[in-house]
Structures are given as structure tokens and as C-alpha cells.
Image 1 (tube, chains in turn cyan, yellow):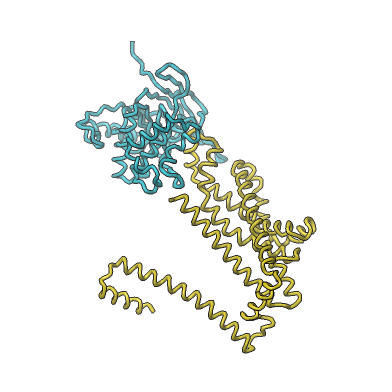
Image 2: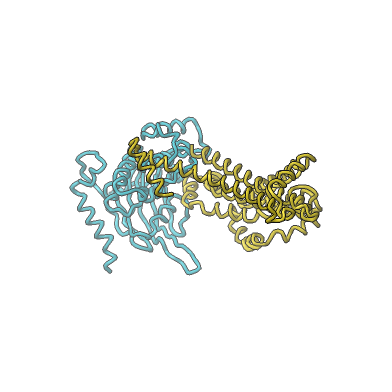
Length: 261
Length: 280
């Protein structure tokens, strides 16, 4: 008997179209894949293929026109997992201090309990933002802003984190460090993560599995499990792993495959 | 002038070995001082020319008054206690109009933001009401509301209101849609999006709109006082022109200049205070 993976969330034949007076644009067609509890999944695909739409559907911001999402919580309950969503930019509000920014979600959900605020304070300490809590976001570096945005997301205690090209606003050097840093911090929390990226190296170095989408209408072209042999746990270690280049070639081939025909 | 500045700064650099930064700061302060001095000189020159022309008979001081006649007129208004009465009335009416414009604008633009359908339906009406010359409505206000403070306040409101609503609403719409998405990803609803992002994000545009509004409210109040008042600076101007006391008219105009400047300064101060409070 084959042991099927136990998916926290399983997308089954998700379909979604955008409608305008000019006509219908099919963004997603029969998108099916799953994500295991605690797994990091990277979603790559040509730009404009509907990756963000897919994430919005998983986050519950859009409802799929076709298909279903099956929930399978580890504890056997059936409620939809709490989702935390990190957008492309940090969107910290300049009219709030760092602390007021990170508790924004708690404020909105009326969850300003001692327990939650203690957790936020602990995260601020752990992520070296303690001394910046009363500063304005503009006084933070790019990396610190992303950390603050992560705390804002984690404050509500999500099980599943969705990251929509979260580091694309950063310059390349900062981005290398910050993406490794943020994903390392998320790994420590033991949460499940799905990240959209158009950077293949980033996908390979961060994820346990890469899901490759086709161009519009997007559908799953291939799923590639990633196993890297890491020499050390430095942020760039994954990029020096012996398997890295091979994975990169495989992804590149699948992605460019359709451009040829 | 330019070469002079260059020479002095070069000399200073030689004598005291000033750093470039200090030199820059000195240049800047010199520039600020010059601007202030020229502003006062211009004012003094204007007053002097005015007075001399009137005394020498180049202009007829009956029609054009003169600084000394204005001062005499001010003294007379002070003596019969009507100065503060008229100025106070105009100030009060303007401030009330201004505050009501603010409240109504906030309420209406909030409603428009909440309902895209409503704003789409109302759009052509807003455009027409905004471009309509509001002075055309003043006679109607008199018939509807009589001659008195309510008419004048309504006139003040009518001039500023529609532009203010459109500015506020445009400001609300210009808020980054991703910031609104952020509120939804944190589990918020439309009300949270408005309270946490749209309203605080629109404070700068609201402040600049309010600076325009205070001037417009003053315009509306003066129009109202022209037509329907027995008090206020607008009334004083109309009355003065009808009885050919042009000193009174010109004095009132000067008082209006001072009022407009004071309002602008007050709002500028308020803006600075709010900006400081928001961004430590």
C-alpha cells in the first residue's frame, strides 16, 4: 500500500477567470496540488500567469469559480487553517510607530489580549527590533521592515503563511539576505509556507518543493521536490549545495519548454 | 550681487577656514535674511509711494485713500466700537462655514467612498455643482433664508463645499489599493480599511484642501455680506462704496488681507503641529 502524503490543504481543479467588457480572461485552469503541514512550497511561473490570483484564492480573498480546497488539519478538525499573507511590499504605515504597525492585525481583530501582546513583544526581541519599537518605519532598514511585516503577520497566529514575492521591492543584495533570513525565522516557528517567486534560485534555496505553473491559463506543469545537502546554515549555503545547479537546470527546462512550441 | 557673495564666502573660508557645510549654512541664512528684508522694503516702499502720491496730488485721495486716511478710518472705527464688531462677525461666519464645510465634506466623501455606485451616480451632479458660480445662488439663499447670519454661512459653505468633497474623495481613492488589501489579509473589513488606512492616509491631502477652503469660505462670506447683511466687512465695503466713503472700503479690504493672512498662518501652524505629532 502506498502511503499518500497527508496534505494540510489540497487544491482540486481550481479555476478562476477575470471578467471585463472586452471578454473573459481565464487566469487559472484545473490547478491541483497540495501542501503538507510544515512544508515550504514555492510557486514559480511566467509573469502574469495568475500566481497572485492563486494565492488570493488560498487566502480566502477571492473565491474560486471552479474546484474546491480540501482541508485536512493535523488535529482532525475541519476548520480552514488561519492564513497569514505577506504582500509584495511591507506596507508599514508611516503614521504609526513600528509597534503600532505590528499590532495592526490584533487591533482589527479585537485580540489585544495579554497573551498575544506578550507574543508580539517576544518576537520584537527575538528579531532585534526591540529598540526600534517606537520608531517610524522609514527609520528601519529594508531587512528590518520585512521583519516587522513578518511580526505583523505572525501576531495573529496563522498556521499557513502565504508570501507573494515578498522581497521584490528590495535590492538584490538585501534580497538574498532578507529572503533567507525571513524563511529561516518562519521555519523556526514550524509553520507551513507557500511563497510565490519568479526567482528560480530563490525558489530552490527556500522551498521543500517547487510547483511550476504554465503561462495563462495557469495550470500545474510540474512539481519538483528539493533536497539539498547543506554544508552549514549560512544564508547562502543552499546556493552552494551540490544539487543546486541540477535543480536550476530542471526548472529552467520546464519553464522554457513552452516558449519553444 | 552674486559675485559679492562669492567673494565674501571665499574670504571667510580663507580667514576662518570654514567647512563647506558651514559655508552652505551661512549662505542659506543670508538668503533668508535678504528675502525678509526685501519683503519689508517692498511693503514700506508701497506705503511711502502711496502716501506721497496722495499728498502730492498725483492720485485723488478721495478715490484712492492714503495710508494716513486708512489709519484715521481705523481710529474712527475703533472709537465707535464698530471695528471689532464687523471684523468679529466676518471672522465668526467664516470659521463656522469652514468647520461645517469640513464636517460635511468628511461625511459625504466617506459615503461616496463606501458606495462606489452612489459616487458613480452622483459624479455628474458633483461636477456641475462644483463649476457653478456660487454667487449666482446667493439671491436664492436670501429669498429662502432671509437676510442674516444663516444666509451668509450658507453662502460661505456653498463656495467651498463641492470642491472640498471632490478633493477629499479623490484623496480617499488615491490610497494604495495594496494597503487596503493588507487590511483584508489581516481579517479586516471595509470599515477597518477606512479607519486604519484610507482616513489616516488622506490626512495630507485633507490638510491642503482645508487651506484652500478657508480662503473660499471667506470669499463666500463676503459675497453673502455684500448682498444680505447689515454687519461684517462685506457690508462695510458695500456701504462705504454706496455713500462714497472709499476710505472705509479700502480699510476693509486691508483688514480682509490681514484676516486672510492670519487664517493661512493658523492653518499652516495646525498642519505643522499635526505633521509633527504623526511623524515624531
